[in-house]
Image (cartoon, rainbow, N blue to C red; front, side, top):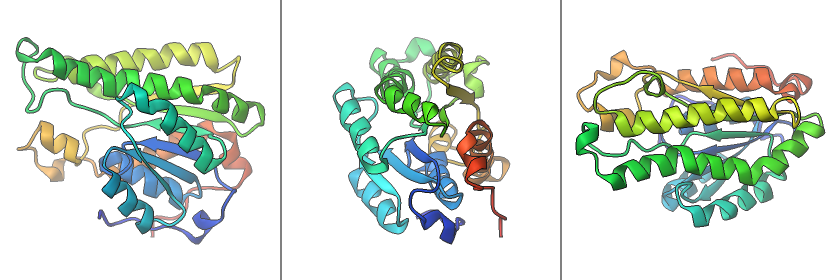
Amino acid sequence: MQTGYKTSTRSAEAGRGPRVAITGGTSGLGLALVHELRRRGAQVAFVARQAARVTALEHALPGSHGIAGDVADKASIHRIALQILGRLGGVDVLVNNASSLGPTPLVPLADTECEALERALATNVVGPFRLTKALLGALSASAREGRGAVVLNVSSDAALSAYPGWGAYGASKAALHQLTRVWNEELAHGAGVRLLSLDPGDMDTPLHALAVPDADPASLKPPSVAACEMADAIWAALPVAAAAGLAREGAA
């Protein structure tokens, strides 16, 4: 289990903080976000594919709610959405973090199998679209109630820059980035749902190690730092955070 996180006593107080759902929550940035948002007092439900890891994290972090499921699987989306709503009693924030590189090891587009491209698109674009759509009614209700509503889609610089070997991943993140921008234009004013597309930077995560196995971990951002930055962005967009007095605590 990754170390270096603390959960405040305040985070265990039920019902006070924003209700947050995080996909890909048992590894890398997702795991760091689960810890960071719980530390700040959020009520957190996290989704990941491996049931054993979901159960282990749920036991290690009391008050969190683990859901085993694959956002790339169309048949699983409504079950995941219903479990999120059932565990949290609604949802104020959705973080679409689960990602697939597509082919591993990375290869040029001409050598990318169609199935690998489909996997990247299903996980990085279609899955977030389906889950957001399934939770949109609940998010809109949170906005109407004055709690605020935010969808954070985790992007990448590969969405904007063309890196050899990153074609499937970059194309899928580019699609997610544009989807986010369009949906924010459609929803931010009428429904009151804010959509954010944020690039956390190159991080020391299992996904990055899979993509660039010879990278020096010391040159990469710790996921805990990226999680703090993303949590700050969520808090800035969510009026309930300021209303509830859930300011960021000291790092000690």
